Amino acid sequence: MSEFAGKTIVISGGAEGIGLSIAMAMGKQGMNVVLGDIDSEQLKLAEAELQQAGVEVLTAQMDVTKLEQWQALADQAIERFGKIHMLVNNAGVGGGTGSIEQTDNNEWRWVMDVNLMGVINGTQVMVPHIKQHGEGGWLLNVASMAGMGGVPYGGAYTASKVAVVGMSESWYAELQQHNIQVSVLCPAFVKTRINLSMRNKQSDYKTGGAKKEITPQQAAMAAHMQKIIDNGLPVEIVGERVVEALKAKELYIFTHPNYRPTTQVRAKAIDAAFERAAASPLLADVADQEIISFG
View 1 (cartoon, rainbow, N blue to C red):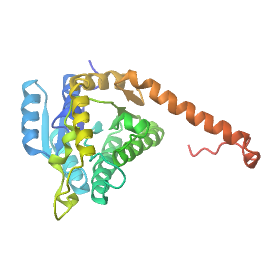
View 2 (tube, rainbow, N blue to C red; view 1 turned 90 degrees about the vertical axis):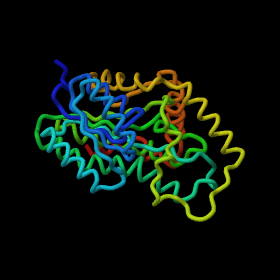
View 3 (cartoon, rainbow, N blue to C red; view 1 turned 45 degrees about the vertical axis):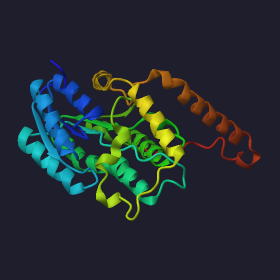
View 4 (spheres, helix red, strand yellow; view 1 turned 180 degrees about the vertical axis):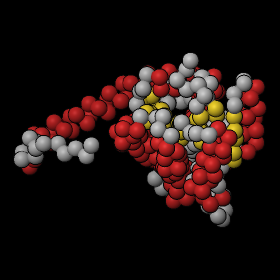
């Protein structure tokens, strides 16, 4: 019997894409599935698909930027299934691509509120419920390869995903004592509609006045991005990869091993920067100091 059988998973942004792929894969493992998503119509389709596959499922429309909607989702999940064992913070938006000057504060707030605060809200609400029953569980945060290094013309998205990776590393150490396994999923390009996130952009983040003209550069970038996504990894593989990685208790879950050289280049550059710091006469008294640990 699977270690996941009979337990309950909550997934934000679960109505399609990576969220639904994880829902289907974990449902096949015997989990009860709770889906939250801002898109009510897509939720109905996801619910029907999971039910057809024999998965016990509960759905609720929600906005991950609203803490009270997370609390309502937790109440519904517990009322239906009794306990919560796994949280997947999957909901995310791509945001617009563009230079520093082309990315306004509304765009920054939208991306950070969904991609970062959405993860924080979900974790703050759901983890206490996972702790409460004492059976242990899982916390999976969906980041991106962008969380492993900056993406040009994607400053807001990169910032949000770097933060998700860092928080996951922090929570990995913090939650070990509670037998809660923390993992962070860092996919590269997958066949989803992440590049069309604007379709669900909340009114709070829309800029008033005349609609901004799309520059030729932005149009070219959007067309290039669409082509890359169209040739991306089939989304169904991602859910199965998550099951495989969770069973192996992996902290970092990668879906694109071909991106390994990019992280190696970054690691070498960081190591070289430490070498230069160690060679600086200004830092001679620091080089041999004991590392301060907060663990």
